[in-house]
Figure 1 (spheres, rainbow, N blue to C red):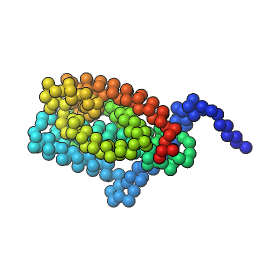
Figure 2: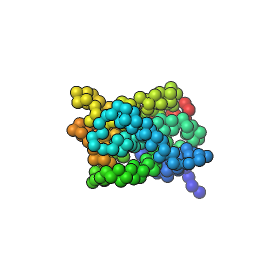
Figure 3: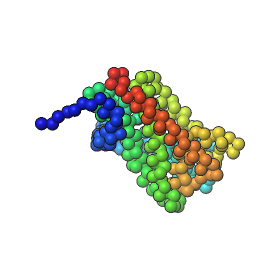
Figure 4: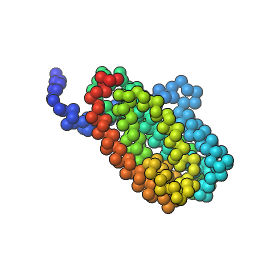
Length: 272
């Protein structure tokens, strides 16, 4: 007969071991979220491709055709779509993570498992969407006759950086959303505003040089420029500084976000 032993403080001591032990739950939740998202849709997961392509088309017209911003020699659709992939991986990840705890209230109130698994599984869904869209971009690169260089081998580093950034912001917002439901109304505004203050529709080189130092303080700049460098080999002299800002901001936010999440985790079941 199996025996259950309840030890005071065991959860705190073995939290990270439990997180690894419950890794299958993370994959199950991610798969469930993908199934639910595209259930009863006509074209299914093709929406993961259509959404960034449609947004890219609008930005090409606005920034490339109307504003005539420079593209640094790259075809403008590739410039925008390469930045869009990085932005969407980060933005959709932290947006889904921020809603994940409230959306899984029944699960949280019934069984024990490390709650950090829930926002992590939400971010994993955004990775699946990214992997569906990436071959489309590479096909367009080939169609435009652009070169695929050795830099593409470093793309996983920037994908990992985008996921860590999404987790860093997502766990903050997920914990705050349990306490203050206003967060869910703020996030769409942040996403709409963020896409226009980040170099998604234009390259960093299009920003006037005297304002560029201020622009790269936005952590999303280094992330997007990193994707663009890996996919198209395009960068300006400020790109390394922008990437350094992103790495530093992601590390600091991740440590602070996980600590806040862990400190408030015990109250989730009572508040949801």
